[in-house]
Amino acid sequence: MSEERRRAVITGVRAALTGAAAGYLLLRSGSGYAWLLRPPGAVEEQEFLRKCIRCGRCAQSCLYRAVDMGRLDAGIALGTPVIRARKNPCRLCADLPCVKACPSGALDPQLQDAVKTRIGTAVLVERQECLSLKGLRCEVCYRTCPLLDKAITIENYLNARTGRHAIFEPVVHKEHCTGCGICEQACVLDRPAIVVGPLQPPSESLYEG
Image (cartoon, rainbow, N blue to C red):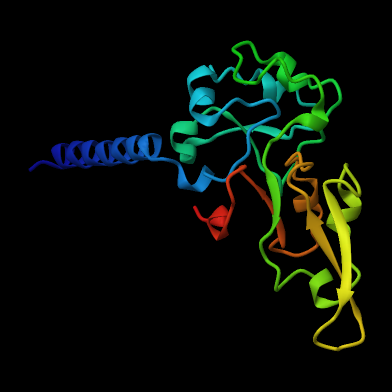
């Protein structure tokens, strides 16, 4: 086989492998993105994927750049808007510019009050690492919550380990939590003790992929 022919074969094989890999990423469920949150007003996920036209207008309208677009590893969510709470949470803008910018109804235009949105729910998943549960007065997630003393409250009780100190535990009230993700971003730990996941109960799989 000539050198020119050999190079052509190698190039062809590489192209085929790249195409197969890309196809796999596009068709897979997108486990790495399974926990990502949608912007305020997003309809049910399957309906959202049908209605979203991947125009990016919601992302362009976000003054805080909290709305991002799913990249290649997003699987079927490729090109759809997502919020990565740890990186840049939703600020619950009163005028909901992302919802108003959506032309397809993927973000429900009936949503008029940002406080009533349900992007997801916050959960204290790393209880053993939470500084407050270790007896330290952290409470950063509580104090940064835009719905202070409503979505997150502090409950205090005796520290069973010492028998004389108090524990001040942040407690999430799902019925009031908007899932904005501000608490997750604010957590001082490298791996946040509190995370925001979809409305179905999140788990350790939030950080897979």
